[in-house]
Length: 156
Length: 165
Image (cartoon, rainbow over the protein chains, first blue to last red):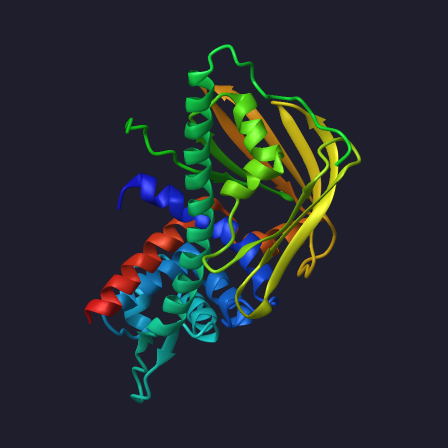
């Protein structure tokens, strides 16, 4: 993934947070806000992201999940609880090992939600680029036409 | 069509209560200012989601003047926000309060838009200041942009792998 793409992604994040919660109560979209909050809170921690990345390649026990980290099994278990509460992972019933596995649905939901709002802002800025290009052309055609610039109209 | 370089966006958290969004545009400051402060121009770019259209766009761009923006969406849905201009320095700085009709966080936010000259173009720096760190975090819901980015990268990877599975 290119760094540029990532930059857009991060914009998405903030703009999304800033706007979509507003649109939710107005009837746009029906995703559960609380669950998304939990998803994002869970994703905010690097250890938890690493755990999810590991689980993306297949289920694993707590012991297996602890191995790559310089932390106790108890500490990893705490992270697993957060992920579990967010619905991002689940626990198999298999007696002793109780392997954890990734639950893809909440991630997909979070992503869909972000995609929508990323689009909102990327579209807006894209249109602003286009508008500015058009305004520049108009100014070039009338080089001494003066900028309409700051002239403020009164009595709106 | 001239191949202008794709502009990238930058998100930072300059203080506990703020979120800053930086983006460059290939036009002089006054032009960007116009596009930002004249309703007939603003309406052409600041858009809502597909299916939404402008319902109101009133802007009295002077200190103490009010603005109100509203969109109408599918099935009668409405989204509106407004506020008061606190500082108006044409081509340089626009400060206004911001409150949504259906506000989900406490207190007005204060938005500062700076128009900075940069390499023949304009860098737009938008800083949103919320009532408290708690509110800012609720808006941002993540401790750092870097964390968010890797979170998203991870999201992509996870989605790709779960789709492939």
